[in-house]
Length: 399
Image (spheres, rainbow, N blue to C red):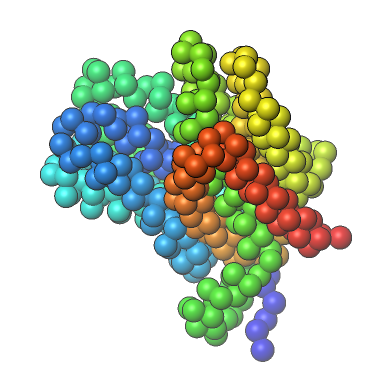
């Protein structure tokens, strides 16, 4: 008979320095997406591989998370979260330095596949460690901070990417990314405690096969429901950011909104962490977020003639959508019964999040092609209905 896990005492104080270091590690990993997105046109010109293959060089990183997200959660708990994090960052830095030499496109694609494993290791290990380094009164806030890492990475890449390319070509951009990750590795080695027990519970003996463990993860509501709430967010936000600007008739307002919308999404994610900590349970925050997104969609369907009013409504929708990942990430440590379930929950979020980002844009594109703005709104309402149902089920896990 298996012995119960020995759960370390909850920290009474949040290790803010280490939390922010782990957040920066997440930003450096998310830049594996952002650096190829911001340099897409230059990659297209340099390699002459065509839009399809060049686009695949961006998305293949996420496909690894789609396939191996849950597996990464299982392995991180077995190997040790600190080791997985540092190993993933070391792999990422090495691959960026290889890319900075501008090798053949085949080698670039191989490095992108491996970067998928690097990125996945970080997004499974880092939030689990942040949760264990956070005092209960700050945990939802730190999860909200963590949830902004993707948006912040794209904002930084948008701010510094083109100037780096202009000054040092593609080589400079990818080399700078390798240096950034290397700095994070050194900082974490110096400042992150080496004791792995600080980041996880004592392991519970488990004789289940690998496939049985996989099935159990999908059958466990504590790990599954946050991921299901998250998948509808990723399927929608990427699509809103991609397609909504095309409906803004003002040529002057459109580029402004293309910058403002990702910032609103990031602000919403951080706000969700604060709300989840001090005002509402994260499950309720997710319900309110989906309700606000649906309400914005219904108003948007009125097809206002004013581009400014249209943009304000879109901004409200993106802000509400941004609340969802903060709520889902805050939900994981709240629902999980041990660090293994936390890691599995984050692994499942990585997997289902990549699924949403993969199937969402073509689904929205098809609906827009068939029904225009009404097709987009209709799919938003369906997504909000499903997300609300899973948020309600998650709320029932806590009495």
